Amino acid sequence: MINALRIAIRLVPAAAALVLAALPLSPAPAENELQAAPYTVAETGRGYTRLQDAVNAIGAGRGTIRFASFRFADCAVQEAGEIAYVAAKPGEAILDGVVCEGKAALVLRGRAARVEGLVFANMRVPEKNGAGIRLERGNLDVAGSWFRDSEQGILTADDPSGTITVDKSTFTRLGTCEGGGGCAHSIYVGLYGALDVTGTRFEQGRGGHYLKSRSAHVTVLDSSFDDSHGRGTNYMIDLPAGSTGRIAGNWFVQGNEKENHSAFIAVGAETIENSSDGLSISGNDARFAPGVEWGSVFVADWSGDRIAVGKNTLGPGLRSFEKR
Image 1 (cartoon, rainbow, N blue to C red):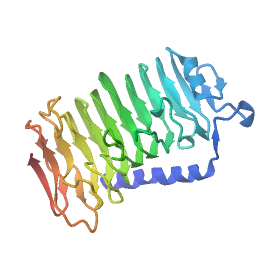
Image 2 (cartoon, rainbow, N blue to C red; image 1 turned 90 degrees about the horizontal axis):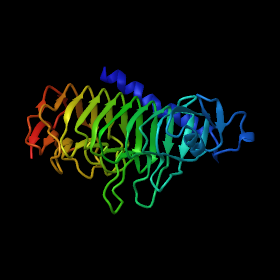
Image 3 (tube, rainbow, N blue to C red; image 1 turned 135 degrees about the vertical axis):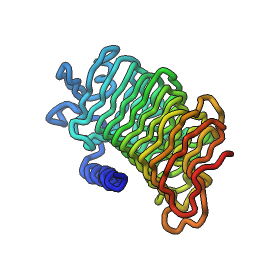
Image 4 (tube, helix red, strand yellow; image 1 turned 45 degrees about the vertical axis):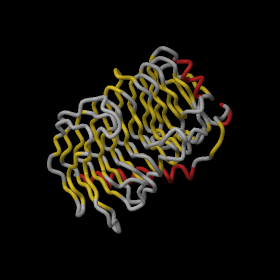
């Protein structure tokens, strides 16, 4: 199952790269530059040339914004409501290099948001934490999307009542520890209620962790963490405040250009804000990339809670568990 997943997920960035090469880079176009408006609110059929105008049209209500196949220099802030941001053709709508409020291409603080089939590329800000999505409150669902070549993919504030799901998405060449406020990561979730990640690929990190979450509950299933071409990276999964949940069916490879190679998964390494009792880690495949000469630990635990580390397939030089 893991091998099949690995093959399937690797196709996502390759296909999207072909799309990117074919699409022109331009500011959000005027309506007469396309046969149809670049953004359409599905419920009304009305088109908009600016993403913020489409978001404002939905306001505190509920609606879907469909993105035409284009490469946009555009961004938006969602203050209220429940909005779905959906590519008409998955992988062919790219938000490229423009952030709102010095934060992200999409700044979300409404009731809920769904992002489907979009590409977020080249997000950078002076604070070194430019993201595709900055989630400040509310629920978030992400599916079939690609975050690449930015300082962060998804960054959130705290919302203990909120939930986040990420499914069948790809995070490529993200992360940095150049910022004065600390490292940026592929995904960094604050004190949220729950984070679920399924069928997702993390690859070629450029600093920080691949997945860092302070959520009370975390599920990471059937995903891949390929650090073989990473540079200056740390943990693959970091649960710095502790967390319950399940990590299973994943594939991990640690590369040889690490800032910190001491563990693949870390639990409670910073502060203990959540219980980790019953956190289950089993059925994973973890190993080193060719040429790696050091040893490491699959799960390092600072929490002292009852973590259930079950049977995992581990490569040579990798120990299963260590209390720290």
